Image 1 (cartoon, rainbow, N blue to C red):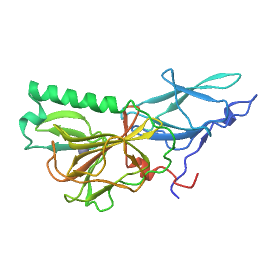
Image 2: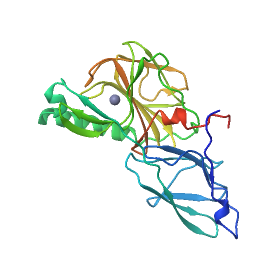
Image 3: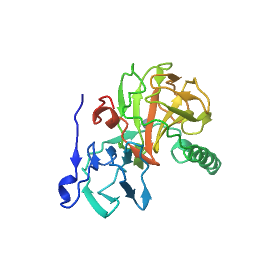
Image 4: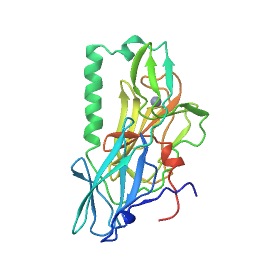
Length: 270
Ligand SMILES: [Zn+2]
C-alpha cells in the first residue's frame, strides 16, 4: 500500500452530493486517476474524458502544466473547476560524443524520422478499452540504475533539447522486459532511426507505453499481452549511448512520468 491522495469535492456543493474524486497528486508530468459517480461526465479542453462503467478515468498533465481546468457535468449542473499543479524540479543532463547527424539530423534522416513518428501517431489512434490498468509494474526487474529520469532537460553535444520524454533504465543487453499492464501491441518496429527496435502497447483509456533501443522483440502488432508477459529485451539500437531501456508512458499524447505510476499510485485491489 502506497500513499493515497484523495481530493473529494463533495464539500464544495451545498445542494447536491457529488463523489467526483482525483486519487493521485496533481503535479507536472503526473498521471491522475479518478472516479466519477453515475451520470457524471468530465471534460478537459472541451473533450470528454472516457471512463469505465464504474466511473474510473485517467488524466495526464504535461511537464509544463501550471493549472488543471476541468468541467464536471451532472444531470442538473455544469461545474467549472480549477486545480493548482504542483511544480517539479527537473534535472539537466549533458551528453556529448553523439554522432552529429543524430543530434541534428540531415534532411534525409529527418524525413525518415517524420515517417516513423507518423507510424507511432497512427498506432496511437486505435483504442482498446476492455480493461482499466489501475496498477502498473516496472517493465524491468534487473536494471542497474535509472540513468536518466523523466523530464530531464537534455543538452546533446551542447544543443538544448526538450525534457526527457520517459525514463531510462540502464541494464545489460538481453535483460528481459515485461508488460507493465495488460494491453494490445500497437506497433512492433525493427529499425527506427532514433529509437531502434521499438515497441508500443495500448493499455486503453488513452494510455500507451513504449519501449526503445531493444535488442529483441518477442511480440508482434495485434498481440494481446498480460501484465508480466515477456515482451522483449534491453538493447542498444538506434540513438543510444549504451544499453538501456527508454520507457515512455503517454496519456492522449501527453507524456507522463512512468516512475510516478509506481510511486504515487496505491495498488490495492479494485
Ligand atoms: Zn531515454
